Image (cartoon, rainbow, N blue to C red):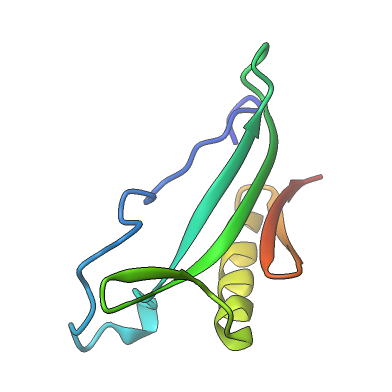
Length: 100
């Protein structure tokens, strides 16, 4: 966030072609996020950011339903967002960005 406005990095590879490339599995290239953003149209300020974990298999994107994968995404996003004063809360299978 910068002055109440959302900045997203690395969102260009929603569907990637990393499948089958070995040696980088710890980066979890099979997992991605779909972003639902709500912005106040009068101010441009972020109202809500809800992230849906997805899984890529055979170059196809599906909603992630595996508990371990969703948990990994939650922990990873929470850790990274805390560096910038935010956090990520899990609500069901969705991840919600929150700022204090």
